[in-house]
Image (cartoon, rainbow, N blue to C red; front, side, top):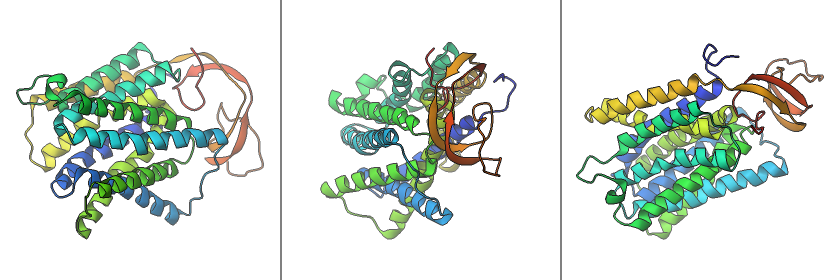
Length: 354
């Protein structure tokens, strides 16, 4: 199957939708910051995502997934890095440097996610993917570059340690992205719910420890509502993107979020259209085109694998069973050794060496 003629795979749409929702939430969170302290707002946003997804799952009657012992370890590591350590480091950095400069440094997450996926988790990166990621990140950097007289991230940072804290936060979120990739076949709404509850609780406890107080009920509801959409639904969609695309590609698509936030600010908050916005749009469009036109195909071998996830009967799931439903269904199944050649992404079934 040639990626240049085929429809977009579901992981692309999920990753772009995740970036869109997170990007829209950024100017809304900035508006709430005028009334809520940063640490308290972070806690309410994350907690809103966890509680909102929990209610959604309860209304659906969704059961908790059955995790293998290895999955539990990866999930705990992801929750610790992304829900516990990274938010604390980010809040420390934000407390001692301008938000615009921190936004510039936060673009390191996409780069670190890709580098870890390639160097540690052996995710394949072709030249087209590297170039596409580079131009998307360049667009994000262009959007977040301060328009004041300060001309570089080094000059912008008020001191080394706050900037280092933000970069370390990006590193732990990059670890989180790669760890979550390991459990991407698990129900995405459940993964996002757990991470939201842990991160929300952590940040709220830290906010209270620093003397912050809860705002009034209207502001609490607004913050948690934004958190449910921009953090909860967005994260669930990002997990779907990880499932189909791998960490580096999903992370690159998610890097379009700053452009979405800037465009939303222009449309609804009357912020000016700048040359940076237009140039970033062009760079990000080029990066997405490079990714969508990737064609990665070679002869590869699938080893024996046993797991459970939603699937249909295709070339990778030719097994028989007694279920009458031949559509999407879930049960524990075994993959026998298989060697073939076709176009593919580094998804859960294609984590082979190159």
